Figure (tube, rainbow, N blue to C red):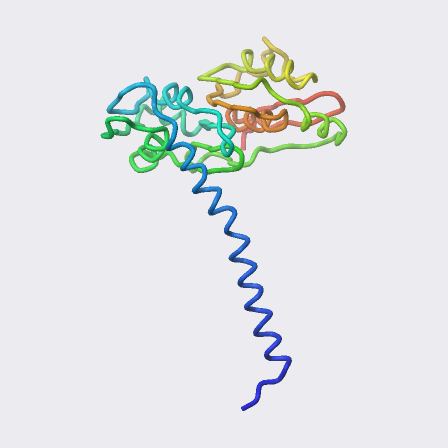
Amino acid sequence: MRMSAHVVYRGLAKEWALAIALLTCLPEAGATENWREELSRMPLRQQIHELNRTNCVELMLTAFQSNTVVKALVFLPGATDEFYMYDRAKAQITNSSPSLLRAVDSLINQTRIRATFRSPMLLLHTDEDRLEPRIVIQDELTANKIRKTRLIPHLLCNDSTWDYLQPILRWSIRIDIRPWRNSTDSWHFYRHSFAGWGLNGWEGLEVAALAGKTKFTVKPKSVVFELDAK
């Protein structure tokens, strides 16, 4: 039985569509493996046997090094709550010379904390956390200006307040960042726990929003952060 040209074309089209879909998935798979490879080269700076509320966040953030794949390691509020609010996140480490990757895997396997690579940042979170920052752009010119700026080369926040982070963002991006320092509007922001290397201005705002459970609006010559209650 001879097949019509139309049927053959449809069959080939489906094969090409499948091939394109598979190829589209390859970069993400490669990126996932790359971040794991990078973290495997970063030793923890202390020899420990357990990750817990007294050592985990500081130990992992200070172990995070500059590399070409992951520009920020971010503890989202759900993850820090597992340590500081509920005191139930504990993970044993048996390796005598553990890497940052071993620490991440130990948290994934032994606690409620999960890891998601959202290029260029690795997010440590729980199922309750939002993995995409809520952003409203009212002025594209200001947004484009922010994307061209750079933060300080290495930014480390370990349970840091908005009063600590806001001046760094404001100085680096050279734009008005609100709430202002010492303002009561930031009292309900989560404290920020992340380490970043070589972040641009826009990436810095995203990291700040995710770590602080906030959203931000880009206005003419200013950026306004607010609590993200959802």
